[in-house]
Length: 264
Image (cartoon, rainbow, N blue to C red):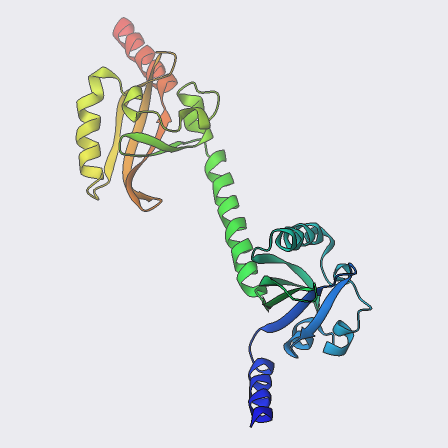
């Protein structure tokens, strides 16, 4: 009966979709795998016998860029007897794959410290995450390079400002403006109009393009063409404003009108 229970448990462990392991720190200072389930061979391409032989160190498996973090993490767990979790690249059958491992150390009566845990392949999830980060970076770069001013504000305060918007209002950087009250940049003659447009936009109605005046940080007035759109910023209802500085165009138009008055 006892043998049957052992065989059933072994069968269960052998067919789990994760690698079950026992990694032991011995009193004499050396450490190595003392148990690893067959799934390891499917992931790493190395048989359990090789992994348990003690002939290969962890540096043989782990990507050089991730090894230092692995050593620091498991070392801290060993010293403080706290849970250990690590994510990094390991050699697999067809190059490196991303592994996530977690374990908890237990001190044995004979002085050994044993980490019982699991690790599993998270390559697909990690690749999707990296693709998302890269896509977000490309879009952010695009937004930063646009010649249009783009701001997002919620609760009356600036949450996002692109580089062009920062330049137009005379800021040294976008970060300088984050958290400022958006009405700080409203020209007194347009305060009520901005409030009315914002009230409609926050309810889901886009505001059509309109010409108005903004105030720069140095107090100078600029003419802008601006429009607003409903936006969700980090789960919070917000307003996205897109604007262009038309000060030069307005001055040119004024000069033409003056010339027309003089000559006609």
